[in-house]
Image (cartoon, rainbow, N blue to C red; front, top):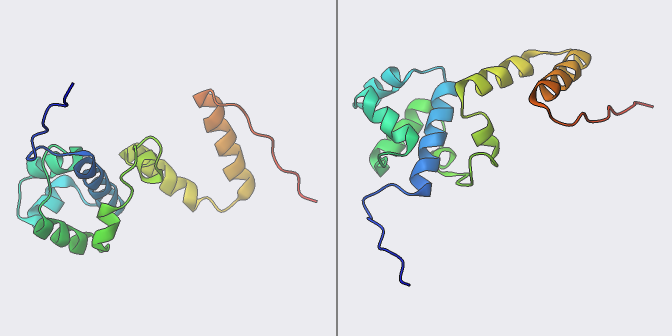
Length: 134
């Protein structure tokens, strides 16, 4: 049975990955959708559509976004894997990203280990054995 033809104007997995990366870097830089939209010369609704992969980001706008975010264009293009399996997908949610930033600010390794154990327990994940230092 032949596969139905895909509309070439519709976003595909790469478009979704680019949008996810755009969102990740926007959050990392502390910009709102409105702030990024204003600097890109589009509406915030358009940025929302880019981020969910509903609309494709043109090459020119992708280059401009990379410049605004201070990242190479490749940073917006890489990692087109399933978001649940990719490192960037794990922190694409703003709450996950905030948690990662706060965790990185903790300098005490015992506190970090305790926090990881707590979160794993809350998530119902199997507890990992702590490594004993010699």
